[in-house]
Each structure stands twice: as C-alpha cells, then as structure tokens.
Length: 425
Ligand SMILES: Cc1ncc(COP(=O)(O)O)c(C=O)c1O
Image (cartoon, rainbow, N blue to C red):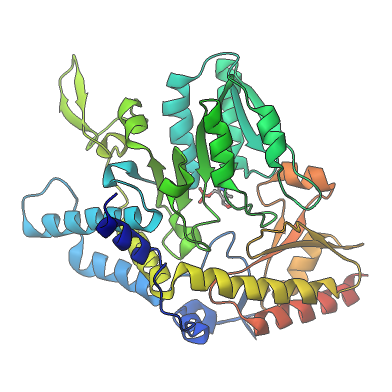
C-alpha cells in the first residue's frame, strides 16, 4: 500500500484524530429515542449489544434516500438510478476504508453477521472442506458462529472443535497452538464476545491458524462499534459485521473476504445482478463483489450504514474506545459493590459489556422490574448458550454500553438493581 493510501486509511479510522476529547453529551443528544420516557421514566438504554440506537445522521440519510434518491441500482440509465448507484457504491468505499480492506471487490453487502457467516459456510467451506477436516471455534461464540458449522459438520462429516475459555472468559493462545494441525481448515472466532465482553487477540490467533494453512473468519458484530478494525493488519481471511450494532440500520451488514478467496468461491445465491449473461445452458457470473449480491440489495441500508460509519469516524474510534473503557471501569466498580452480585466475564481485555447474576434472583424477573424504572437491559442466554453452560447459569442480566451512555445511566442501573433486589429477595 502506498504511503498516501495508508495515510487516508489511517485518517479514516481515526488514527490522526484531534487530541481534544469529543463532547459525549452532545453525541448523546444526537439520538432522538433517548429523549423519550419508558414507564414514565427517562429511558436508560443499556442493550446496545443487541442493537444500537440510531443517530440523526443515519435517520436523515434514510429519510433523504427515500424522499429524494430512491431508484434501483446498477440498471437504470436515467439520472435518479445513476445517483442511487453512486450512493450505494460510495457506501461500499466508505466501509472499505473503515475496515481498511484493500479493495471494494472485497466488500460484500449482506443482511448482517449471520448471513455473512452462512455465506462462508455455504460457499467457501462446502467447496474447500471434506470429511475429517476440522473447524475450531471458541467456547464464547454466538450461536450464529456455531450453528452454521454444525450444519456443515452433519452434512460433510467434518469435526467441530472447541477452544475452551478460563473463568475470566479468556482464551489461551497456547491452547490454540496445541489444537491446530494440518487437519484444521478454519478458525472461526469472535472479535468481541456479546455475552462476556471479552476481546480476543484475533491477530495472534490468525497467525497461529495460518501457520498450519487454515483460514480465519472473525465475527466482528460486537467489535466494529467499539474499536478501530483493520482487516489487513489482522490478516484474517473473512470478517463479518452488522450495521445495526454500529448505529446503522437493521438488515444490512458486510462480509469482507480476501479477493483471491472470493474469486475462487462459487456464488451463494442465484438471481439478478449476480450474473453477466444467462442462457438456459449456461450462466456466466458477474465480477466481484456482485457475484455474491443476488437480487435487489438493501440500498437504503447500505447508505444508512455509510452514514453510521461516518458518524463513528466523526467521533473517532480511539476516542470511543477510551470513553467506553472509562465508563466500563466505573460501572464495574459500582456493580461489584452490590451484595450478592456475581460478574460473569472479567477478561483483562474487555469491551463495554456487564453480564451478571444476583444470587437468588432470576435474571428475567430482575430485568422485568428494571423496565418499570425505564432501564432497558437484556436478560437471556444472549444467543451464547455454551457460555451459560460453562458458568452454570440459565441466563444473565446484561447491560451493554454505547457511545450515548454516561455515568447517570450507570447510577440509574445500580439504583434499579438495588430496588429490584429488595422486592425479589
Ligand atoms: C458476537 C455476535 N455475533 C453474531 C451476531 C449476529 O448478528 P446479526 O443478528 O446482526 O446477524 C451477534 C448478534 O447479537 C453477536 O453479538
């Protein structure tokens, strides 16, 4: 990569950000939904791990698109369609810069992380794996990075191996070194756990997998809203993300894959836009990335996702990571003072997720009472049942942080837990 393009990439990821800390109160004010009340109380939204709220920039981008720019892409010769195409393809470039992919040919728009992983399972894995081959996942994976591989296991006779976690919720690189072999064809790992907050050393893990010739898929659903991601630096082969977790719309996400891999992979779905020519005898496929984008894409979603990326960049990923780390430390400290609270997930390298249980209280009862106080937290297995099994709990209460949260939210969270505890114990 040239120095110029390196500078542009670094700048876009916020590495040359202003030294001054952004005004996070002003950032919060850009989220209209946070001005409303729930059960008569100002809303405290602590479920960004499930989906983030949307800033005005994203809402307005969607509104403008449907009011002024809507047309199908890649097809029309009229101005409106050409402009919609430019916006859609411009969004691809925005995402490329955001994760520092080498080319827009490596950016495939999909519905979200789940679809991205399923695309890899159906296309790459089916044509590159056979009975006896192994896929390694960690014990902290979301179901969307477990079930597609189980389906494949049952169809192809491959093996699914699990890299264990320790009580803090961390994996051990040495365990991975001991587990990989020439049978390993894929390492599929989360960048940041939605249930525990643990941030995995994906670059080091990639290096270990590559040393035996395996490919690496990183599930970035939870990472992209919270930290700068550089797919070339990680050197992963696939990276999946979801727009709605990073302040963008639902129904849009990205599969990044190295160009050579995508070139060799068969299409995942057939239909319009993914073809170059069709006769009843034979179909020639379109060039990358369109070979993997059959049918009319989520045009508004891609445009909204680009607005979300620009929103994140306008704050700076490094500022976001620092702000959220500070808030996480404050929240951890306050929660740990609550009698009977057991924190689930205490990795040294951890993002803004606080998963916990209160002795003698079912997480669902706790979250239901907290809703009466206007505090929105999640109580569930968080689509990571193996994590619950490891800690021997049916579910946890999870408060997950976003750029709009502040110390007042944490104080309201703590007060609400104390109140609910009084009623339930
Ligand atoms: C770590 C992780 N992976 C994958 C997913 C699936 O994302 P989506 O539902 O947007 O496809 C989630 C969603 O919660 C997640 O947290």
